[in-house]
Image 1: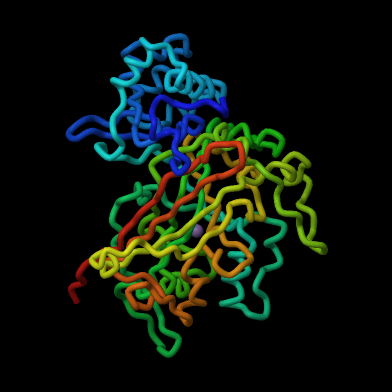
Image 2 (image 1 turned 60 degrees about the horizontal axis):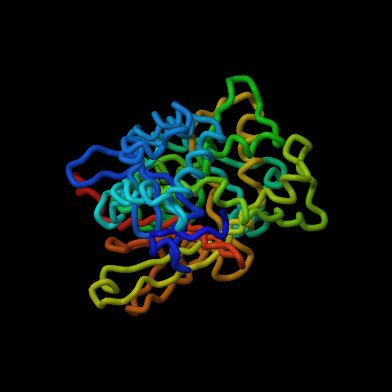
Length: 434
Ligand code: MN
C-alpha cells in the first residue's frame, strides 16, 4: 500500500499532507448541511455517508459502517483497531489508480473540495489531559523562573500533567478572544484585573484514545499503543502573566482554560507506522524509568519522527501581502516521554480513559535555538522580542496576530504524511465595565 498512487491527482503531489497512505478522518459540513464524517485525500474530502449509501463500504463490519454515518468520530474510535484498519484499507482500494471503474465513479461522486466545506471539531472529547513531556521545554521554562534549579527532581521519574478543560476546545480557524484575568506586576503590591498582556501559544500534538480501560485497571506499557487511535495538532493558548500569578501551588487554571485549538483531521497510528523511531537515549546519569514505564519496544519505536512548525502573521503583514513568518521548527521525536508511556502513567492509579479522550504532549521544544514551541521560551519571557518582516516587534501575541501550526512526517521512499494545520487569530478582549 505504501507505493500506491491515487486517481485523485492532488493526492500524489510531494507537498500534500493527505496522500492515499494518510486518509485522516474528520467531520465536515456543507453550507446549511448536517455534520458528516469524511476523510481527506489531496485537496478533497470523501463523504463517508455517501460512500456507505452507495454500497462502497459493503463487507465491512456493521459497527464500522454505522459509525461512518455519525456526526462525530466517537463511534468509529470506539470500534476495534481492526475496524479502523479495515475502513482505511477499503478507502485506499477505492481511491487507488487501479480501483474498479464502477467503484471509482461512485467514489468520485462522493468527493467535495475541502475548500468548499466547513471543518468541524472531529471528536466529542470527554476528557482532556495536557502533559509536559518535552524535557527541553521543561528546562527552558524552568530556567526562566528558577535559574538555579531549572528542572524539578520529579521530572525524570513522573510524566507531569494536569487535567484540562474540554468545553473550551475549539477547532482550527476559531477566533481566540484575548482573556481577562488577574495578574500581579513584580513592582506592584496588589494584583489587577484586565486583559492579559502576555498571550502565548504552545505547539503541541495530541493523541486520541481509541479503546478505553475499565476503572481500576491499568493499561500496561506493553498494550498502551493499542489504545491510541490517532493524533492531531493542539495549540494550548496560554496567558503567561495570569499563569505566573495563579500557578502555585496547584498548577495552571484560568491561564489555560479560556481556549485550546485542535486541528480538524485525526491521523491514524497506522498512517504513522513508517515514521516510528527510537526514543532519544537518556543522557548518562539520568535514571532509568521505573519498570512500569520501561520497555525495550517503547525505547526502540516509541517516538514519532514528525517535523513541527509554528508560523505567525500579523494584521499588518497580511495587509502588506507578506507570507506568514516561520517562528520555529522542532520535532516530535524529542519528547522525553512517549504517548504510550503517557497512557500507562495516566492509568497507573486505575483512572479510566474513554474512547475519544485527548492526551496532549505539552509544548514540544528541542535543545537547539529555533526549536522552541512557545514565545515564552523564544523571547526569554518577553525580554528578547522577535522582529517580524513588517518591522514590528513581538514579545507576546498582539490582537490580529494569527498563529499557524503544522506537522508532517517525511522519509525517503514514503509519501509525506501530514496533520494539516491548526490556526487561530487573536481578537481583542471583551470590554470591561468598571
Ligand atoms: Mn500545554
